[in-house]
Amino acid sequence: MRINLITLVGVALIVLGIVAFTYRGIPYRSREKIVDVGSLPTNANTRKIIPMSPLLIGLVIVGGAALLAVGSKKFS
Image (cartoon, rainbow, N blue to C red):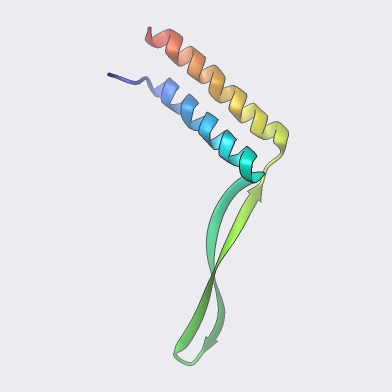
């Protein structure tokens, strides 16, 4: 079964939009150096979020749905 590139991008945008809506942004992890005493470096993993507007997230989901519809129509 061959999948169309437009359909794949549409599905990716929908998934990204749902994740961003769930976390109110795009989550990522960052490693920061806290203390560096002699030969004992201390690092901390922190979870950060790139904030996104709910309107922008909605537009990403709608755009993904539109690409999915166009891709499936073009594929059939």
